[in-house]
Image (cartoon, one colour):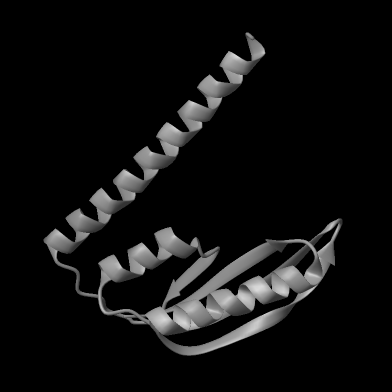
Length: 122
């Protein structure tokens, strides 16, 4: 299943942002079948720099695509195949992985809130 994805990087200084996005693209190329990509030069907006890459990647399964999204948080995804066959078990596994990640983030936020409350009270 082919997908076109956009992944953005924000930070400072400009050189750091450009290095991070290049390293990330290299890492993805080592992990996935990247059909093509384009890295766009970092542009300044206020005090931060923004860069992004547009990548076309071939994924073996819907679960692999979803795992990629959870790992890299693309800002946009376009599925390029007209028809996609997904088995029930794959949807279940994908949703369970998604829920586990969301529960982990929820617990992190709750722990941070509790820590802030404790700091205010001391």
